Image 1 (cartoon, rainbow, N blue to C red):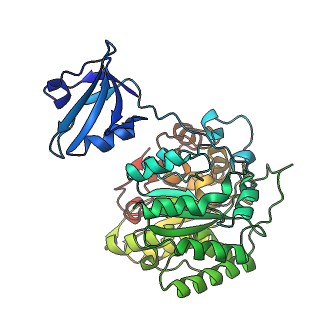
Image 2: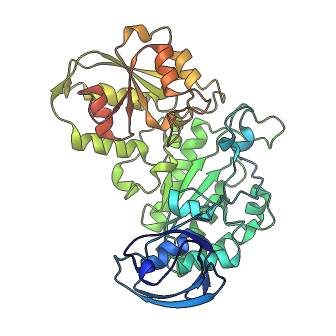
Length: 432
């Protein structure tokens, strides 16, 4: 049920006599759960709407309108309170977080609606049959699903949830219903790799074209795993084996269906594969194809220019060689380029966590405080910051970072164009 807070003037709802305090109960006989129901049917040309007036009367309205017309309603609540995770995954990153951070970092969300709206990966273990039916009916697509393994026994054990074993049936219902799905496998060494990974990829591929891809990503291992399931870190040799395994699978499928997180290539000491292997980069937010996308964008935007001043770029340990090589290569386009890259060790989570996106403010400060006086600009990737707020995972704000280091900061957006701007003319960056 959605309770009306406002009816826009001269809208369809206004013409129908809807008022503040009225409640939307059903669309086409289907119960109204949250604002997604409204948004879906508001885009349709014909449907029925069951309303309970603030006087308690139930009214069924037949509505016919143009696609670009809206009913014109706003609600007291969108009813999108986060559904939390019911699993106890052996690799859960939240369980490996230190105490004392902001409360939102400890929320284990597993909400299919957030998957549709924000691209969050969900396990679907808390999705009922009616939820799956609703996803299909409203075409909440694409959906991002964390599979881990299609083998029921392995997935049940990995997620520590007795309801986890029916993922293949859930995905079959979704894809046959027209929902497009991006999937991931968080790889736990000795658990869902090897033959289990091959089985998972083959069974996902068998679901057809609406199962768009499967990303294989390494599980994060922090220094706070005391008392948790023992997980081995990825070594160079292991990373090479996974890369070769995925190559063989994609040859079998005759398409780049399985995509690897860049971290595997960094661990193996191999340059990540070319941009054309990642399609539309649909899994870039999952750390898949980030470097290939950056190179592609740089190749499209580079031009002969010049710059001044000395710049210091922040990088995680794993991406350091790639970033250093990329910056060096840009010197043939940017005259007078004087830039260094610093590999910041992650003391906060431990050195087993070496990606740039999990760097924290204090580690950056400690890594550069003794050398920053040599530089005019600090170049910081936006992935280190909260999506909608200038704060690092350890609570240090961007303002505090600037004050402690006393240096101008360029925050890049993650695109090649933004990196080129940071190193050349200061455009396409946020200047702090």
